[in-house]
Length: 370
Image (cartoon, rainbow, N blue to C red; front, side):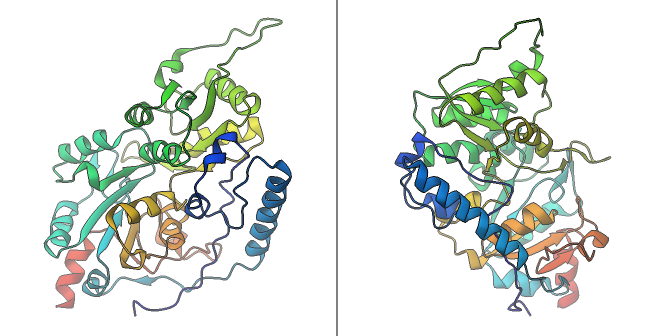
């Protein structure tokens, strides 16, 4: 039954938090809700109020962790038609669902064509920040998939969209630890930036008495997946976060692994973010999955009821939690990082509504159900 009840408690994510910033004085009342923050005062100029709210937030999170209820076990998908008919929109993760590295997963084109023929809206959401929406559009095209830029939402875009949503001052700059996708989205949004791939070749000569300078006008540090990651970037970003008053620490995602090739898993953006968590002793504000920021953005843009969405992904702690946090139906595919044994492990508390091997099972299960 699609209407089965699944008990899932999601506290304010331990992987994301915010810190007092003068930029947030302009914060509109919807932002705390968008980021999953409840009960916070909007008067962030009052540090006493902030500290009380932050402590309350932490206590609530701890209490909710203690009372986390084991979700009902996920069911294998046996009737694809029933699931397809129950929703209007399918949101797909990309890595491990649509492709692995630069290789398309079998049956994807036919599955997407079938869903479109049945009048379903398709949206593609990825935590990978290395490309902009336009660049992802070209990747879909190269793989032979007809997907428009308006249907694609990457965490690189989410970082720029978040800065716009909090009225980040245009006279402030963003330091980027990441790749070209973040730079392009910041540029399209009209923000000044430093860093990115060009800092990948920079080195620090550690001589006695050396003091590293940094730009005092940097008001945000955005950290994403970065194949050019180095010590220069860690030190520069750390100085900005720790020493520039009100500097925001934003992470595109905290994924442990990613699919750079279809042969194995590779260390993900979470490894870069973790370096800054260690050096700054601060938690980032995460704009990618499982934060609800992108879900709310997509729902508002297209006017979609979240109860009419099915989130399809290969990761429990990002994709499936993303869907559950947004109040959507969830389908786990075993074509990516999660195996059936991982899903059914007693230590796993995140249970999707359904699971199946890959999205092309929609075709065979549809045929079997007729």
